[in-house]
Length: 79
Image 1 (spheres, helix red, strand yellow):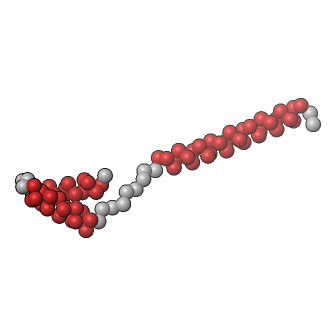
Image 2 (cartoon, helix red, strand yellow):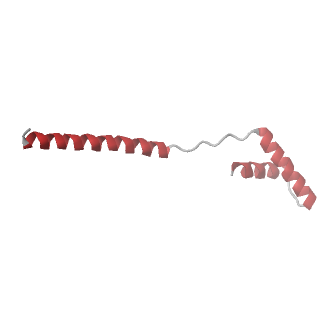
């Protein structure tokens, strides 16, 4: 083989390797961009947590209402 053919093949191989590396990197980047989906909160789990918040609030003699108990339950379960 001549030196020119060897150089051309080596350059083509480097280009192919770089293109393949870019494709892999692009796939990794798109996979990282996808946000992790959180499971939706069920009404039953929020209701149970709200009831427990209500019981805790009443036992301590704190003021409040069922709406604040529900919102606090949603926040605590979302975390």
